[in-house]
Length: 206
Image 1: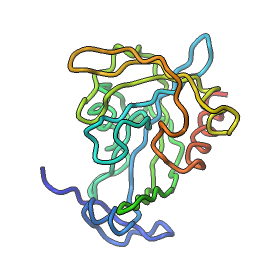
Image 2: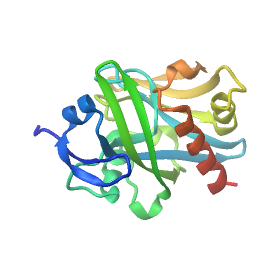
Image 3: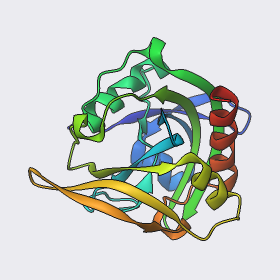
Image 4: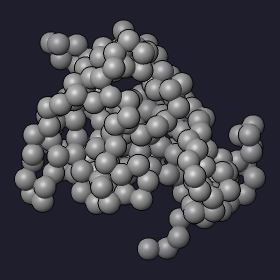
């Protein structure tokens, strides 16, 4: 596969050029990503869908994350990000079905890796059962749902853990998940990022 080239930005969102994905993370350059959060609505209230990252992932392996997400390449626009939903989850959506929350800039910093993202964030109202998902197992190990109310309590500091339910793939077998997860189980996006997602979901589905 050819090396991914990403558009780079300064701190004010102005385009500064382009660089390889590895260089972008090594130097901590701002770049664009696509984030799509699936939200369900049922008799028990709202729920959020979380992907379980594959253990084979180079970064944050095995942690809970955004339903579907990925980098936008230098020649791409946010509309192109819907490919991530199809590739990772096996779900076909159109750009018009997505609810935009705007651009959320945030930073994740760990040794040898500084991720500065201008995330184009979207919501998608999901009505499909978990069994309809066809996961790209080299990227996504499983899919779970959590009560949105519990999700709010976790990131608001009112709960130490939340219940997640779904499955983890083992080849062609779906192994059930029904367990508690605390913050350490999540990809360490800034808490302010999660709180902005919560605010966006609350405003959209109020």
